[in-house]
Image 1: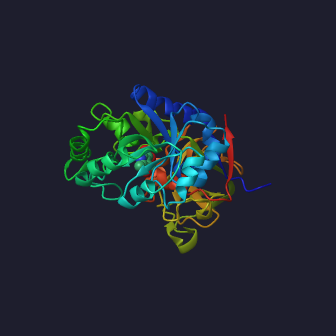
Image 2: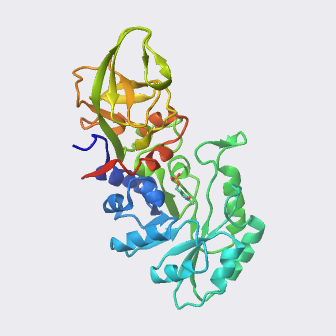
Image 3: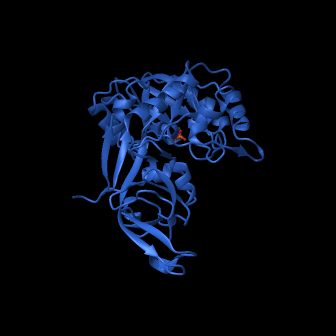
Length: 367
Ligand SMILES: *Cc1c(COP(=O)(O)O)cnc(C)c1O
């Protein structure tokens, strides 16, 4: 028997979450962001559930080619654009749309000889200061692109730094939205602004003809703890499940695990779970991080080891060797442990946990 840990990808949840975006923004095109191997889910595993998306967005050419290999003929957007002039041959061959975020990319495109027609996402740096043309350079870049015979369309693009919260004590989007709108106001062409947080929190005042939905599709709330997935009606699309492989009675003042970080205040019953940091569970998770055993909520105890962790079984009913443990996601009986709550136990975000499940964990698809 293999170790009992596995990650289950829930097709229904993925499709449900995409439908939430459609319902929120019926007039927008929706690109499903599947970078980082679909946020750790596996591109091939999420693809069936995202067939009704208007396009896919990602970073790696190899991932784009994998989507073409699945039979997808619609739009694919490279969010960081090309990394070298040679990438343009692949963009032409595989019909890929791409961002242009810098003068050097613009030069490469200008010098490229092709019969292909590219759909370009011209990126503005409206305040995040990662990628994009500053507002004062943006119009000139647009003029240059517009004159290129191998440019078919130009979508005005920006990315919010704080759509999930506030910025400098104000709401998180107004200032950057203003910069963007001012700069593009006289330019024709569609606009692409919103990520998950902007879709959920700001769709009433951000006009985004094309949205780039990422984390929400995977059932994590972009602004947890302000909002819980149930506030947005999202469902977890990945469940990390394992089993109890040993049970110990621990007496008062005995310790649990490496470093004796947890010391029992009373006599307690604990369970050892086949899951550790080598599976992608964060080692720095604190005692108290929530876990489900047999669908009942309990807590992590002591230090996470490479292959195991300990949980409190004191108040858990009917527990035995082989009882189901949910580290995040859905229990087979339907109880939900949002990945966001688990991420909070190690001061990170759902994104990092779902991207970090390791190679040795067996993935399964649930229809
Ligand atoms: C990752 C990414 C997104 C999706 O962000 P989420 O917060 O996961 O919705 C959108 N746009 C760009 C440019 C990105 O890099």
